Image (tube, rainbow, N blue to C red; front, side, top):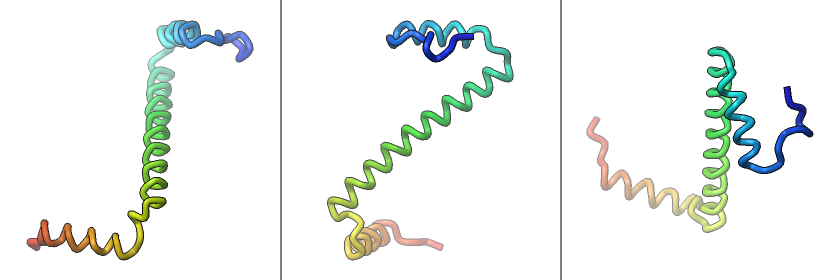
Length: 82
């Protein structure tokens, strides 16, 4: 087992070490690693969405009047048929 201080500092070296570790994981560990990877991906997407919403808020796209205009436009373009 490598200690954090023993991990390669460069990206390619770290990639090789991680690939080697993945090759030796059992089915349960591999499944857990897949879930961790999905969580990391979800967190990255959340950060991107959050930044996008912050940008939209700063641009005034979430002002109550603007939101009502957009809702009215969508309702005109897509009338509810229920």
